[in-house]
Length: 370
Image 1 (cartoon, rainbow, N blue to C red):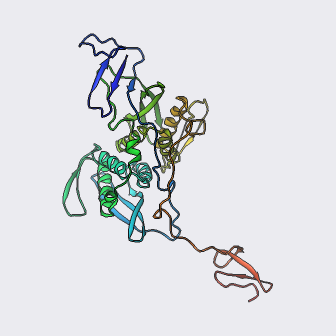
Image 2 (spheres, rainbow, N blue to C red):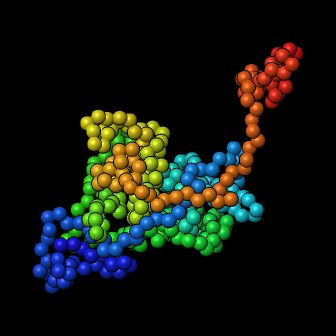
Image 3 (tube, one colour):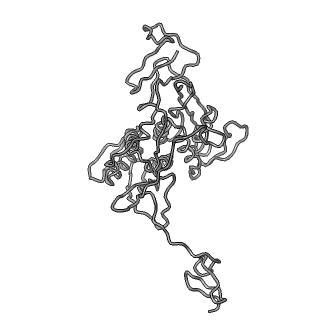
C-alpha cells in the first residue's frame, strides 16, 4: 500500500496494490507507511561554478543593507566579483544583533549564489520570502514601506533585490538543480499520514529544547528511503524555520552529494556562547558541538549514513554527478608571488634574505648591517 505522487504533484491518491483507487472508507492503514515517489530524475548535471569561496586576498566589492525589526537590528552584506563589466555575487553575511540561525542560513545561501542555476536561486529566495514569524514593517531601499512576514523574509527580499540589481536573474542558462528535484513541491501526505525519523535535541547553554522531524520517502525501483524535508518543534528560535525551508529544498535534489555538501558546510557553524556537549550520533560517547545548527546538520548526515546514502566520512555512496565547472568570473584577483625568507622583526613579513652576506628584508628594506 503506498501513496502515489505524480510528476507535478498536482494531487494525491491512496492506491491499492493493484493500482485501483478504493472508495472512501475502504482504505486500510499499513503499519509502516511511507510516501512513495513514482518518478524521479536520474542524475544531477554540473551545478557549481566554484566549490568554495574564491580567494580574494586583495578584497572584493560588496553592498550592505540594514534590517531593523522590533526585536533585532543587523546588517547583511552581499559580496560580488567584477570582471569585464560583469558582477557576480558569491557570498552573503549577517553582522550585528542578528537572530540565531540567520548566520547559518546566510552561509548556506552563499553556496546557492555560487551555482550555475539561477532559477534554483530564485526558487529558494522566493520560498524564504514567505517564511512566517513576527511580522513587521520595513522601508525598502526604494523608500516604499513593506510588511515583512519575518526577519528571514526581509533577509531574502533584500538578497533578491541585490541579485536583481546585479542582473543575476537576467542570465538565461541551464537549470541542473531544478531538473534534479525529486519533486517541484514538497510531497504532502493524506490523512493517513506517513512515518518520519525523529530525534530530540537539548542545548542547555541556549535553552533550546526541540524535536527534529525528518520526513522520508521511498524511491521507485530500488525502494530506497530518502529524506526530503526537515522541520522542528519545541523551544527554539523561529528564525531557524527559514534554515529548515532551505535545507528541505536541498534534500529534494536527487543526487545526495548536494545535500551532504550543504550539511557538511553547516557542521562547523559556530555560535558565540552556543556550544554544548551532546551525544555523538550512533555512539554512546559525547563531544562538544559549536551550535544547535551544527548538531542538527550532524544528525541529518548520520541519518544519510544509516540509510546507506553516505559512508562514515559523509561522502556519498556510489558515483556522484555533482561537478564543479569553473567560470572566468569565479576567480579572484591574482596576487603577486610573495618573497620567501626569514621573519622580519620590523614589518612582520617573511622576507628576510641574505644580500651580499647581510640579512636584508625585501619588503621594508631593513638590514642587520645598517
